[in-house]
Length: 128
Image (cartoon, one colour):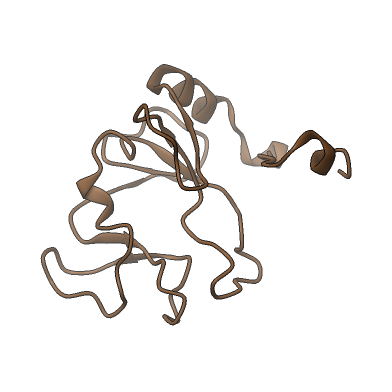
């Protein structure tokens, strides 16, 4: 879990986001679909799509990475799928909640429970 704001009391390791923190969405980069820290204001060694995470203070106040296309990572299949704060607009594949609901959910999640977030239609989810 990550966020620009201090840890809200989550059960997972939590990393504070700062200038120079990116989620790599460049499918040609060896760091595709991974968190990378670069010196603030420097040129990144990968093409940027979504921007420096620190530049989204509403959406990324707190967020959790949804394990989509992570094991194994397949270039071009999708990256940067998060559970984050709603900005009032549609997301590009993420799941967003109002801040109080997100904080409550992040605090509720426990690694020992092996939580899952399922994204899809009812018909798709019936398979699982």
